[in-house]
Amino acid sequence: MTQSPDILCIGSVLWDIIGRAPSHMRQGSDVPGRITRLPGGVAWNIAMTLARFGVRPATLTAIGRDAEGDELMTACTEMGAMMDYVYRSADLPTDTYMAVEGKNGLIAAIADAHSLEAAGDKILTPLEDGTLGSETTPYPGLIALDGNLTQRLLDQIARSPLFASADLRVAPASPGKAERLMPFLMHSRAVLYVNLEEAGYLCQKEFTTSQAAAQGLLDRGAARALVTDGGNDASDGTADGIITQQPPAVLVTRVTGAGDTFMAAHIVAESQGCARKDALDRALTAAAKYVSGEHAT
Image 1 (cartoon, rainbow, N blue to C red):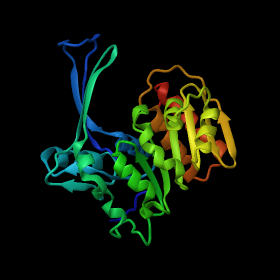
Image 2 (image 1 turned 60 degrees about the vertical axis):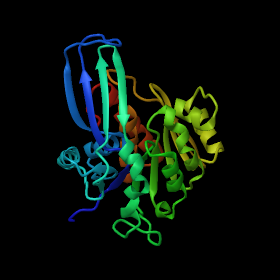
Image 3 (image 1 turned 90 degrees about the vertical axis):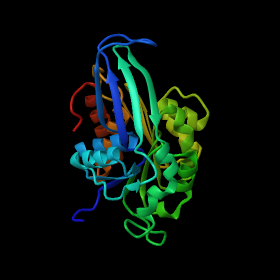
Image 4 (image 1 turned 180 degrees about the vertical axis):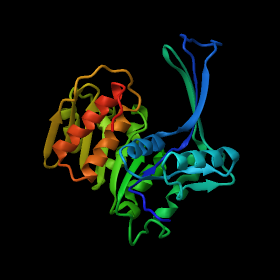
């Protein structure tokens, strides 16, 4: 291997099969539209957002040794990710996410991520067999972790010596899965990226501002927490204090993916040596450009 990854993205990488129709839809609708198939999953979305900022990501995930898996491996490699460390199973099929979207938004979706769940800690093998690290010499670089993993595996990662030296950046897959990240509230090296709703789930309390949410997460034991709230202010909280900034005002044309863009831009800014205030500013600016329809890079 001629290059080492700049960051490891751990979690779901699968096929997104999306049917989109230009008309309003309801249950039972049968309308013309377009069906696409592209690489997806939270870990993949984070990896590709990082790649757009010039970072070389590698993924730790599970992909089947079937035709769909071979195609997914090729597609991901061609899009700029290192797939050398992926766990590939002959017994588990490649995971799939299927959704139907109309003019009125998401109609229905099914996430079949059973193979990632069944693979469990096998996806972490490169971190323990000496390929990327081991218990005695743990991986020292950046890791982006998505909350699609099972509660059991997330608990294991939070306690594992394999992550003792990593710069661990953690994001929930959705507000409903935010509570899975409870073990990382006491992790000394974990940085949590959450929105206001997710912070509320983690703290079991309702917050009205990002600053209050960041303080709440710190009070629960978090080493560091970055809390966003859409077009309202965002906060970066550590033991050294809380920094709060207002994002640029823009016309919103899309929302899905804004959190991934914010997280990726912030990671890149800090990896380039930016101070906390400047990194937060760059992340908010990138996310604002993204939701406005511009390229975030």
